[in-house]
Image 1 (cartoon, rainbow, N blue to C red):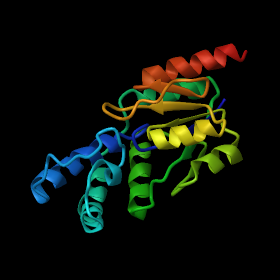
Image 2 (cartoon, helix red, strand yellow):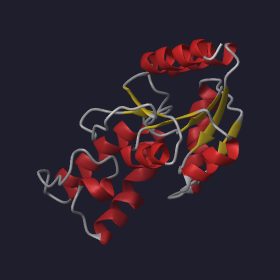
Image 3 (tube, helix red, strand yellow):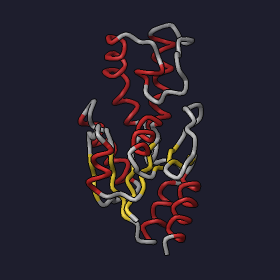
Length: 196
């Protein structure tokens, strides 16, 4: 099976780290810690009512720092190795590297520390649908509900790696919610066994 996979919030715990720094910025710098406008949104541009200047200040002062503090998600390495032993291919399809090219290097550092080697990479990818189509992925794992919805609306089977508070999506033949790498292992193993 060919598995498309996002990095942030799926392989690397960066989304949780980014949200931690978003709160620090909101409380300590902007002095408005109660100004979250939508907790279900994964990206700060939609979670907060920040001005463009405030968003730019956050990106400049915190994004790279948060990236450097990020590590592999709990359980990822074990499940990844088991799935690779079963013969699955992994294609990384990520927007990472768009804000700062150094964030790509930081992701590669985290992967090298875990001795993780993916089959192929798509960096700074805003059109994940096209990459999924081009690669003929059997399933895509992502943590952004908007991306999951867009992919599933276009016939791509998805695993929605939903973190606490993020928007729920109705499950269907094309959307399955997962919350950890054990869930992912169960779903992919069951899919693989049903195709034999």
